[in-house]
Length: 505
Image 1: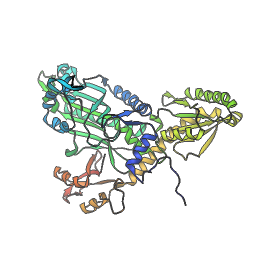
Image 2: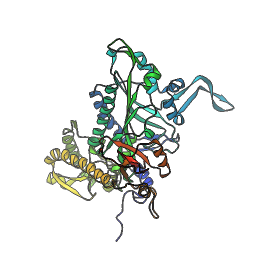
Image 3: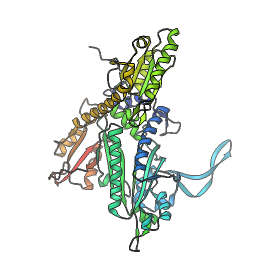
Image 4: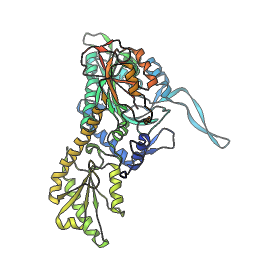
């Protein structure tokens, strides 16, 4: 029996890293830039990011935050004020040391050395803290809730498009509060927003939790996170929300006069989601025919493909397609009109059809002379086989398409949830079994990993060092702990903490 031909080669099972690269290319999402480690996000990929922005920005503003913009360049002295923070980012920093170029022997060379080197923004706690120190005087100025949409630079040694790039896009929120309790509530609120966004918009099942000491954000007291499982069963950290305590406030001098007239330091938070989510969506939802986009973030919900068997029929078929498109564009889908595109390019029908399958568009509608006669349309869904098509009456389409899109959204979530839950082991209780689970066997593909392990952990920082040889980390401590007592899966000591362990991106 011959194997069914797929649009993407190699398949996920044959070579997962190369499959990822081929889906990126086939879906026309992004490409490598001339600068090592950087990427060009192409229109289809950037439109996905814009849809993510649209939803997150509205949620951020709905909860009282406002947008601002802060400089790309950060004085070196700002980072030096917070020792743990600079230590955590030092190896990833891009540094500007000169302010102009001069020609010498036919070549351009840096000249005009700066008095103080500037760091190209790896994250903005320090420079925003400098502003907060000027803007906050009294408890009446609190809470201060700021977000910015920006690019950041972290020098990556092993870049991969979307997942780890030298420059990437994100939103970063920064807030200041009068009490520890209020700041922790803020960090948890943003984690809840990210969790809802992941589940309802990206169709991604999530594991919200708290990072261990070894995985915590540099300078934070608490780091909350979201963990996703990819189809190679590795973890991807999808978003983080940090309670920074008074660490940055003390370093940056962020003080306020409280209601008793006393001066104290603010309690601050920061939180972010990035373009790496696009890579995560690919690795969680795509198949061996290309991208599969959850409808809530797809740049186009519907692509209409006119089928023109004879040149003299083109005008009539195109007119029918445009009439359908106009009806659908006046149809509501979760508070906005359906995004519809009519593909009139002079290409063979099969070629156009497969291009949109690879891009992951949720619904494809074919219309031709026979459909005009019967006042019908042929609907193809990305969550079904490419030959599986449903006939709808023209007048049924406006009511049916939003329901179909919701079915696709739910199917993607349910499939990802089923895969994730099937690949979480809860029965591993000793380190030998743990090591065996995370060690590829003879004949196993090294890029296909065991999955997640949920087990008891004693919480000792030293135990995290024992995991490095396996390339495994404590992904998070789930927010909902069982409260039961058992043995640490690493040391065998008495333990009450539940922890997720996995290999990760």
